[in-house]
Amino acid sequence: MALTATEITQVVAELAPALIGGWIQKAYQPTSRTVVLEIRTPGHTHRLLLSAHPASTRLHLVTRALQNPPAPPAFCQYLRAHLHGARVDDLRQEGRDRIVALSLTTKAGPQRLIAELTGNTANLLVLDAEQRLLRDLNRSTDMYGKPYQPPVLSPGAGLRERDARFAADARGPFGLSAVIESYYDEKESTDNTTAVRDARAHQIRKTIKKQGRRVEAWRSDLAKAEKYRNYARYGELLKANLGTIKKGLESIVVVDYFDEALPQLTIPLDPTKSAQGNMDDYFRKQRKHATAERELLPRIAQGEAEIDALRRELQSIEQGTWQPAPARPSANAPTRRRDRSTSNERPDERRGPFRRFTSSDGLPIFVGRNARENDELTFRLAKSDDLWLHARGTPGSHVVVRLEKGSDPPPETIRDAATLALLYSDLKKSGKGEVIYTRRKWVKKAKGQAPGAVTVTQEKSLHVNLEKKRLDALKTRSAQE
Image (cartoon, rainbow, N blue to C red):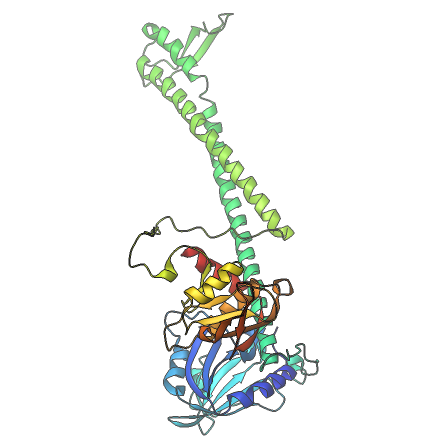
């Protein structure tokens, strides 16, 4: 679902006052159709996302770091080379269309970055001062150097008359942007789950077909070998009559002493072979039958069991009850054992009390489990410059982020730690709430109160929602350590 023109009007109105006057520090391109501009303003760094994905054209701020490819794509390299350090002079919507323009002052002079958020025709373009096309996401190389022509949109394009679908969250400075980001994060998670499910269903159907062909081939081989079932009997009868068999005979009539009635039995012969050769052939073919039964019957049984299991899994996918299997550690991954007696082990790395996590920026996060641990964590483990967090106005865990002296906590680390403070508090059931944070040095024990009770000064606050993707990432990193 793409943003409508009305929604673009609203989000541009919310973001423009904060971004105008800022400087582009860096550009990222996390996906082939998404660009993120890191814009620095006094005291703040904002990440502006511009998406040209046909099904989700949009712009808003992002509060979490996105996964970027190892090497920046060509368009991203161009933005870094030409827009790094550019000042944002203006951010506005072009008329009432789904087109947004950033007016920039770059080292090469005035330029504009155009975001055509127009569904299937979406594009991101860089124009020079004369409005000539310099570069674009869609690689319209035949248009480079020519005057830019805005796309012609039909009167109803973009559902411009539809009411806005997002209501701004009044608890933050960028409430509308935050709601839009949350919506698309959830949609992306759902889409990813759907994609994984559909890919698995496709793979299952393909595997069932392939395994079915194998089972049929094994059954065919077994059927071919079945005619050799009684050949050991023929070999034994030939063995008993070797002296009477002459080379050149096409058959021989013998008494079947394996049958109580002792009937006569005609056994075909290969006239080009001796009596011994014919006997050996019958024994060899009987061994082939025995080998086929011994090897093919278990394969057929196992193959059918695998097909049954795959069909059950496919049925669970079709019924909507399927869940991806948890990732297993690689068999080749080295396992590490910590020597707890190592003398140079840092105190915060030892195994012991507190829940332990690692932020998306690689910083250690400690969470108290109870009042005693809260007290020990805050007043024994934490250092004065460490970051301290707690859910506002409710019982919950103390959370500490270990920081180097003089360093500031990255925004994503703050949000990671605040999410944990909310998770391990009485606000968990509501899934959202305010979390306060400050330096540890501004946290004091409350006199005459129970362990864990504190007074806090110079705190800041952050509104947090329990984001499944963020929690999963925190738990995954914790499990890997």
